[in-house]
Image (cartoon, rainbow, N blue to C red; front, top):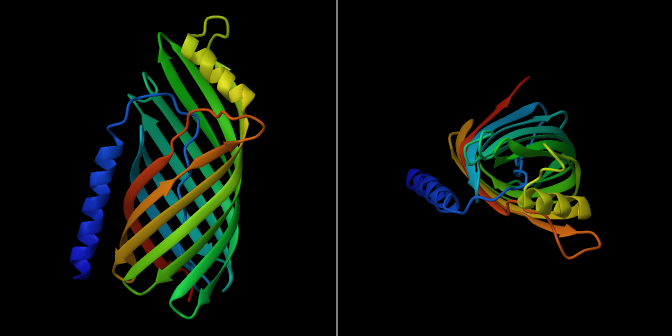
Length: 250
């Protein structure tokens, strides 16, 4: 029964990946960053996760690491790389990394919570054809809460991330020769560089004590300061991956 449930979850995730990939291609300047949910529970526990996934208009891969410094304090890190269209030549690509510090504890033995404060930074490239492209960067300050159920062979967790996103360094190749779409994108970002993000997500994983398959879903919503507009961004993702848990030092 456990194997069938895990297999069904993986098949469902792959199906959603395919459906998300059917969207039209537009330029994107922000993507809701993935939820990191290691659900640490004791000192020197290490969690490593590698995933691949699909948002509406790009594919991505990620590496996540977490280490329990003590029985309550954890350190977290993440790196994500995304590609849309045909990559740098005629589409877009981006890279994002962050680090966080957090506390974790157990609720009634089976349930666990984590609260983390983090900072991340990204660089995004978009190509418009005819050797015209743009580069933008954004920084992100966030707080994330995880509430999960953790057993030996199964984990499930709800995560909620809220943060502040600041766009900076938008560079077109040629300001005077910009395409109309480039001008519009430049105006959207320059007029709305600061946003509040709200990003809920849900993840499940199952397998052995130390190695589990993971399936995750997440959404993102931006709320601009002072205006009713925002720039183009990815609003949903799904990913599948593998998670390793072990104790580094006995």
